[in-house]
Length: 143
Image (cartoon, rainbow, N blue to C red; front, top):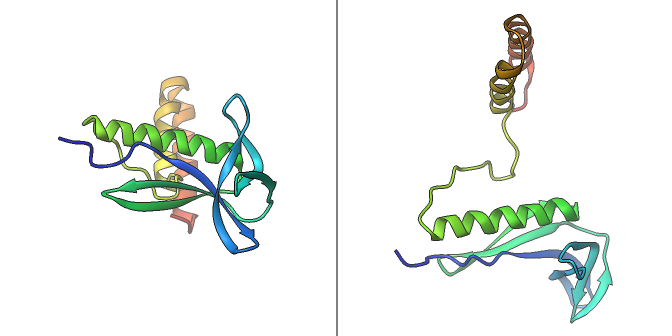
């Protein structure tokens, strides 16, 4: 199977310029890390505190943009994760789906926590955690 999607993922920030709102590439330090709130506008670095960071990549020839929040380091981490995901897909590996926003549901987080707790805690502690978390998930209105 040929490569159907690009492996390149760009990290941009939506900023207000003299020509209106634009997606501008982020500025990188010499060691490759993202400089917080610094973007390249017409090739020149400018500080912009407004709006959020966006990932940008192509799927089947179409550009896809995803907002990844206002934190520069979280955005850089999400970019690396997306590049690895696209690289795995291009090489034929299967990738487990993730929520669109990168957050786990409450039920999934509780299940993961209890699985990890089962390995390290005593049965009585696990039973107490299970009871408390079942009450919590019943009363929690968030998904």
